Image 1 (cartoon, rainbow over the protein chains, first blue to last red):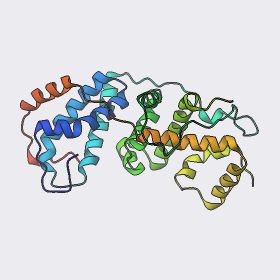
Image 2 (image 1 turned 90 degrees about the vertical axis):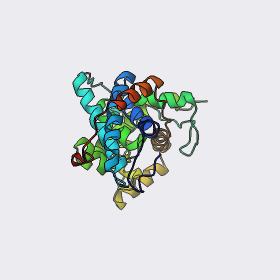
Image 3 (image 1 turned 180 degrees about the horizontal axis):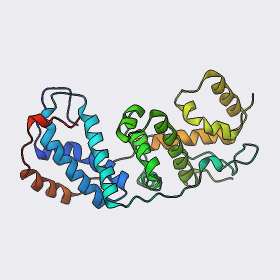
Image 4 (image 1 turned 135 degrees about the vertical axis):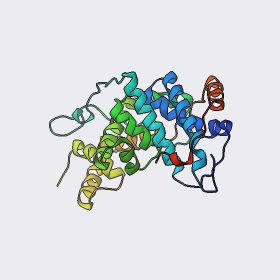
Length: 189
Length: 86
C-alpha cells in the first residue's frame, strides 16, 4: 500500500491498479454479488483515482475518499441495474421461546476467536454467508466488519445515523452467526 | 434483576463493543455465568466478526487490468479546480 502521509501522490496507472485494484474490486464484488458488475465499478473507480490522485498532497483522507467513491459507484451501479433483491431472512430475534430462552440448542463452535489462518473452505463459507445478507445489512457489515471502518464514517457514506448503522450491524452479525452456525457447531457426542 | 437469553442477544452489540451501562453489563455477566448456550452464542458472535476481518481478497482478473490500462491511456486530464471529490 502506498504511503499517503508523504508529499503529493504521483502514481502511474499500473501502480494505481496494483495498489488499489484489489481493495476496490473486492469491496465492489462483495457489495454487488456479481463479478462482472464489480469489474465495471472497479474500472470506473480506478480511472477516477488516476485522474485525481495528483490532487492529494499527503492527505490521510485518501483511503476514506477511495472507500467513499467505491461505495457510491457500487450503490449507483446497483440502482442502475435494478437488481436490488431484498432477500427474506429469518429474524434472529424470533429464535426464542416465550420465556426468553433459545428456541434451538446452541452449541460451541469448533473454532476460537484467536484462531489465526482460515482455510479456503472456511473463507468460502464466510463469503457465502455475506452474500446471503440482504443489501441493507450487507453494506454495513462489509464496511464495518470486513473493511474495518468506523461507524461514523459508514454513517456518512451511507447517509444513515450512527444508531442506524449500529442497529443494522448488530442485526447483520446475528444473521451471519446464524448462517454459519450449522457449519461450525460441534456435533453432540 | 435477572435477564433472559433473548435480552442478552438484544444487547450483545453494546456488550461486545463496551457500550453497555454498568448495571446491564453486570446483568449480562451474571446471566453468562449460569447459561452455557449464551456463552456459546457470545463466543460464536466473536468468531463470526473475527473471521470476517480475516477474509482474503480475491485476485483482480487479468482481463480487467488490460481493460483498465487501455482506458487509462485515453483519459482526459483532470483540472485542479475539480479537486478530489470531497
